[in-house]
Image (cartoon, rainbow, N blue to C red; front, side, top):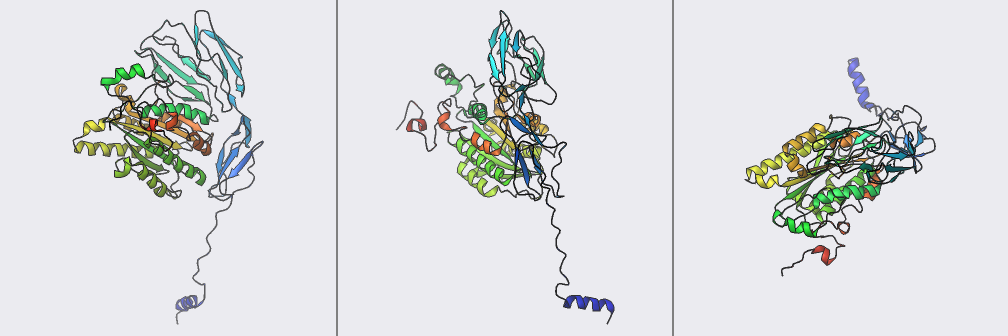
Length: 497
């Protein structure tokens, strides 16, 4: 018998001869990860894929990173220096036109108080005192000294920022720039409009460690999105409404949904590798909560739900038959949105997720056009809410996707209320303020870019956001929530039986 044949026969007769060598187990990451003066938690021990999250006492933040990932090679995300808890400080006030402020410092620790006063002949607009809060932000708005002599009021100089342009006549521009290492959130350039107001959103300078408090989300996002839900009568009765409804001063606008208009809501949820199982579950509950809250009001709305990592996954498309059925959308989210959906494709590609929204809008427009309902489609308002736990790391900048959506929807000054894009970052230094600001809408009197320090605080922030009992400014909207009174469910002066 040939030697090679004998060898094969022996292999066949020997138990375990064909067994494959055991798979190599990925090495665990090291345990030397402590942070000075702080603590840390692990999502899955020291195994590859585990997320390490640092925590510091109030008034401090983890430096240089708030979290680290255990990589497949058994190494944690590298740091440029040993981790420690640093003191949170608020940005310095660089300038204050036509007035004075004190004390003057390079930076201000939590609890510091800034005091402002104006020169003779000028009136102070905004707070006379501001306090540095524990999240690295000054409380109150931007103070300014104004004499009322120009078409627009003095827009002020926010902390950490310089302003160019000191004429406030119609059509004049002012430009803003932040100090090094601070990110500008809002509009870098504003124009004095015919209405005597400044275009765009008031800018602010944000440090990488600064974040929004739970109550900030309720006040600022709640007010802005209430406008999206705001229902006013048709133009024929708008003058009557104006005489009996006082719009709260913190609301910059009211988005009008007439009887034949509609609202599309697109919810984009980050499912990249840095999202823990616990955070992912909170994100799912956030989607369900938002859908349920919006559906509590008698506003015609359809929903799209997209999870994204390297590629987007459609859970519900805006043109699906069940997209207008909140209960069906919630059911599909519960069953169709899962932690392991994206497998090994776990990058953060916000651009691809926004392009998926663009494709949905395009498809819906074509469908309406073929049905001879193009005028009806043009009355649809669109609200996009992006949830992310970090900056995009693939697919390129999402700015061009936003530009495509704006161009297709013809978002011009007379149609700016037909699109609102909100960006929520969840985390600490890993969340890029500039990246959030790139995609967020910029509208007068409102803010569309937000950052929370944890997914738990996202959950807490949205417990009361859009709660119908807190939305007194939504005149004429029926509240169908379980806790609503008979009057809240039927907020009209006439009932026809």
